[in-house]
Image (cartoon, rainbow, N blue to C red; front, side):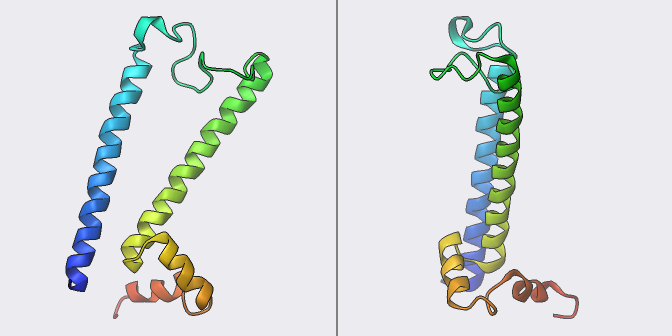
Length: 125
């Protein structure tokens, strides 16, 4: 398989994964936000933030703790999305997965890092 076909295959699979995720998660979130939960499940709760009726540890009993946990949940979700974006960009630039990139970096930290790949995108190269 040529380098171009590998890159094309990687890009198309990444695009398909991203489109599928946006469509499926968008549909699920739209359904939840519009009160579509079966049997009025979680009807009295704010549908846009974490902290629903499933609370087996009783973490949401105190309103102040619930507010703090909701902020933490949103921040952790944003951090996870940003890190996945980093994985996608790394795979597109290097043509390898995250484990292969980690192995290459650990074998030669000064030779395999972001700065060495960034020089490929400088005008004139």
